[in-house]
Image (cartoon, rainbow, N blue to C red):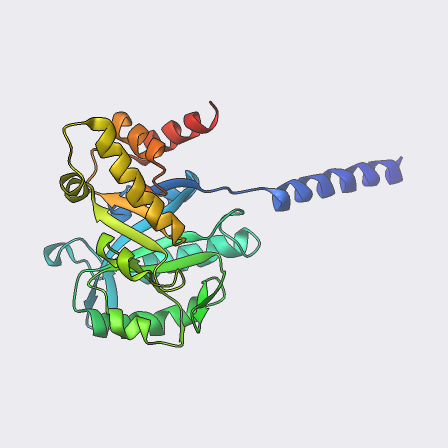
Length: 265
């Protein structure tokens, strides 16, 4: 009887642990805009399986602090404390991964002088290189997290590095140069600017032009993101139908519900 009870306990233990380690975390094509404004930065987006998370940063002394503008700077809110340390903890808890199907994109938007900020960031990232994608001679070695630099980008410095832990968020004009995906995996643009560029009285013609723009990026292996988009279901549906890779939102729960519903249709 004791042996039988022990056997059952062992079976339950193994089943439970198999379930835990077999769990899949599959990212959805969503981007948490200004994620640090959430009640629970990082946690909410990850719980909803967002593929991309955006954080604005300034260099304050030797600290990289998270803020949208200088007057919002709180030196206790650092990139390490709000994002890198929690991500590394989750990475370990999920058996050295974040998502099962793709790396998480951590989009770091530089708001202050780029060169010095990038030097400090490089030194910080070394401590987390185990979970980060890395790049050597323009070849990517996949990790659990892709660091992508946006905003005030030190383009020449990053592009000139043989080994690095970050890539670049490009703009629509960069498509004509067809930069390697390992350097520039993402193209981001202001939705209203793109709408002006491809404006047409005929809605279908305008959609076709934007679709061609997106197809050009995809043909180069690059993802597409727009900012300054109306945060509504109608706009999300349009972006979804156009094949936008990262749909940006300030309403994570609502967008996650919308995208999951699309996937179930």
